[in-house]
Image 1 (cartoon, rainbow, N blue to C red):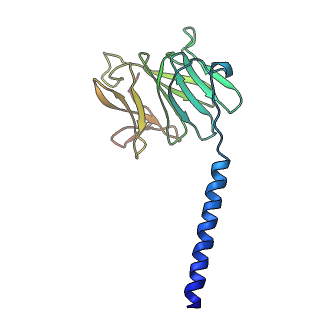
Image 2 (cartoon, rainbow, N blue to C red):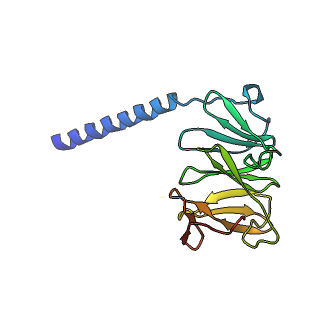
Image 3 (tube, rainbow, N blue to C red):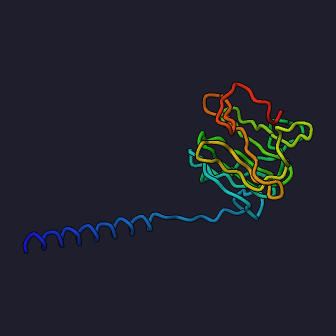
Length: 185
C-alpha cells in the first residue's frame, strides 16, 4: 500500500513538473510582425527558411531578404554583376545539410549562395545542354535524405540537382562524387 502511494505521488509530481515546463516555454514564445516599415522588400512573402546561424531568409516578389532579428539585408539582381542573385521574384528557399542557401525564382533559374565569398552562383536552363535545368521557373526546392537536391517545376516534373558537398566535391543523384561536373555549365 505504501509503495503504491509513493508511486502515485511520484507520478503526480512528474505531471506537475511537466505542466510547469510546458507553461514556461509558452511564456517565452514571442512573435514579431516584420513589414516593409522594418525593411522587408515587399508586403507579400512567398517563402521562408532559417539557416544554422539563425538568420531568416524571406523570399518576396521584390527580392530576397535576410533578417538577423534586428536588421534586414535585401539581395536583388544586378545586371552588371554575374555574382548577384539572378531574379527578383523568389519562389523557393532551401537550406541544405551543409547550410548552403538555394534560391528558386519565378523565371530566372536557381541560385546558390556562398556565404564566405558573399556571392551567388546562377543555374539556368540551357536548351543545348541536357544537364542544365529543365526550366528557369522553380516552384520548390528540397533535399532528400541522401543530400541530393531536387527542385520541382510542375509541368516538367521533379529534376535532381547537383549539390556541392562540404569537401568541395559534387554529389550527383547516382551517389558518385566528382571534382567537376558538367551540369549547369
